[in-house]
Length: 424
Image (cartoon, rainbow, N blue to C red; front, side):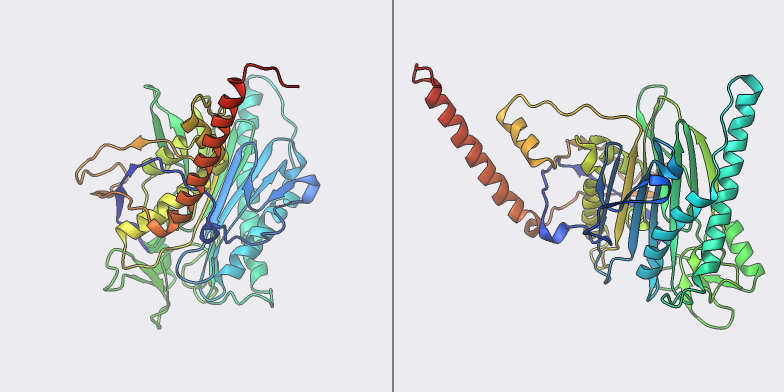
């Protein structure tokens, strides 16, 4: 699905707790963490001190999104690898999960950390070398993995594939690689201390002129279907298939001779104290939420550990509001925070309830622009998230039970204190 407009929301700050229908549909659900190459900690769901990750199946069938976080990547302390992968085609879920498992392992084995030197020109040279080395490693790992895919007998990747957005963070260095239409954005502060989004990747779609030119040069065709006039797709020279909405991907070997490539775009950024977090997500999020909406949601969540889940929750609600006749897409999100947020303080019963729920998003009111164009050239449509009553019915019962329990505890404590005696 192509993103032609975004939806304006007033975030209500509703509590929303774990519900059976909301559980992550990710792979390896019973194996949350494992040990990888050089002792790295591999995380496939859940959260850690600086990361939050969550995926949810849409309404199109099996969840084709995958994600992973490697901590102490390449055996170096506090080095992170994060990756979000979006499969497509009949075997897209298998391709995405294979890439999710193999790519960081291949990259870790391939990369050889260089010793860092201090001082002047050497420091600048080190930065350039750091960037160039990682860029070369990313490109080589992506292309080698794609070549290996066709040899995997267990994967039918001729008309199936996967996109990928990945990053490596080491100290103040951030290397981001992108293949396809997933996206990574940075939440940072401007000169007025206002939180703003910075898009770190380019959505690699056939609508990008340079991408379309490459495809046409290799006899591929680019055009949109009548039902989706704003979504250019790649087609084979003599057949109206497969109609890919991205211009780079793993797999999809039916188009590899017609302009589809597996070479990622690689970007480098030096982090500053104003930078707060990165959000990486599949297009199921970006099709319905703008960059600014995403950072406002993530920054409004009081507990970093559930930021990804809350963002997916709002994306699902946005799908139901914006595209009520379309099937909700799979969503996968990783949030990487550069600073630990202080825990919220609770000074009242309502605060205690918020603390007990562990699933609270604070109130964020976004101004109503009435169709104003955003900086991303996306039209903002005025609407509000309408929370599905069925989804929150069990949550309401749970919160009512908690309020009752807390009320009973409070009354019991007061009656015990008013007795005047000392209890041992």
